[in-house]
Length: 225
Image (tube, rainbow, N blue to C red; front, top):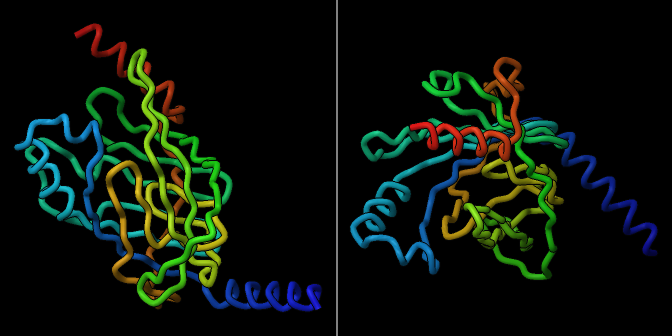
C-alpha cells in the first residue's frame, strides 16, 4: 500500500511539473524587529521601515531557473534599490550588482546559497495554498564579531518549484513566505503559465567573484580612503 501511495505521489508531482511551465510571484514586505535593529536611532528605524515596506519584488521562474528582482517602491535618496537581483538555477545562485558600479564595474557574485534547511512539521495557509515551515540561519561576520539571524521559509509542496526570494530555494516546493532576519517577504499574487513570460537569462558578462572575496576588496578600499 505504501509503495502504491509513493508511486501516486510521484506521478502527481510529475504531472504538476509538466503543467507548470512558468510563473511569477509578487512579494510585499513587512519589517519586524530584533535586538540590533532596536539599537538604531528611532528616526532611522522609522525611515527604513517606511521605505522598506513600500517595496515590491517579483520572482519569475520556470522549471529550471528563476530571477528575483526589485519591482518598485519609494526610495531613500542615494540608495539604489536596483543594486541587486538574484538569478538562480537548481545548483547555483548569482546576485548581480549594478552595471555602472563606479568602484567595481559589472560584477556577477556567485552566492553560497546552499542553505541547510531544517524541515518543521508546522503548516499554514498562504493565499489559499497549504505551506510547510523550514528554518535555517544567516551568519554574518563583522570584524571579530559573528552575528546569527533566523531564516524562516514557508514552502508549498503543491507547487513543486525549488525557488524563492533572495536566491533561497532547494526546498520541496515554492517559497511563498520568507523571513530573513527581521524582514518578511510575503506572496501577494501568484500566476502560472503566463502567455508572455519574462525571459530568464543566465548572466554571462562580468567578473565572477565570491561574496567573501568581494567583502575583503570592499574593506581594503575603505582602508585606502
